[in-house]
Image (cartoon, rainbow, N blue to C red):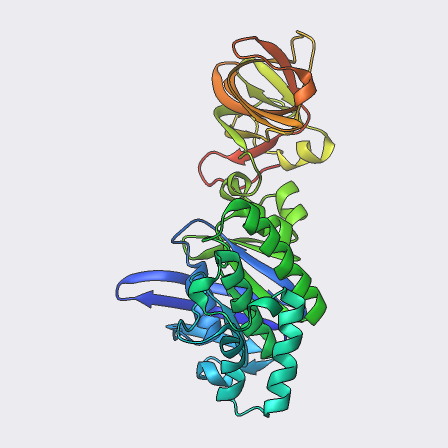
Length: 358
């Protein structure tokens, strides 16, 4: 395993700048996830780390060694692709062994590592099959096994679950995390699925438009988003944003649709100098509770109910805005039946820059 660092990493394709100065630090043995919308540069960043693309500018360090100009074969990196990238004319056994054979590894070591990987991943009954006779989940396990047998110091995953159905995604996701923990390797995983990112990562990097918007633990990023983009991207259902709110003239509360939501002491301090300023209010769907019809409560009229077992995601009118709230199923929300809710936590964002003010 090895720590990974990039310094001012930039990548352009012609006049299009895909990465705009990425500074990345992944400690040895960590499971880091790069998450962001399609086109944000996360897969390009992974390919730069693997040596499959060359940086336009900047430095890549593995364990303090500058590998920016190294060929892929000299980086000791194992990569698992979205498309599995298996050799269709080879059996599972030969697919697992192929990388080791290229390295001229001794036959007994190859046999031992293939046997071990097959046992760990449940591939033993499949060793003599060809990829065409495997399911999507089985193919992805073979791709993982091919990476595992190499015992590389760095594992890179490029959206490996996107071709799988939901049940298999969950199962293989658990497999990936188990193997990471078993091997003690350093892993960097790319996804656009924030649920995958939150459940897998020790360290999360949120990317947008070629830049890292925020880095930290999944829980810290969820609770303390750096800006409106991060707040809206991390969390499911997505945060409700209410534009056109204002900080009160004394800076002690944020005014929304005739309601004053108080800012507590540290929040008040963050809002100093912002009196009467227009802001955007952020309300997470899970940060609501039922309330009596009081002056500080908001009315909510559901129009669509998504029942997810013990929880319901309700879409509807939140005062004069459209929003989503999440409630336990036993609350018994009904379409068209107005209830009163009170937010238990709220976020305040600068209307122009999107930066979190609280």
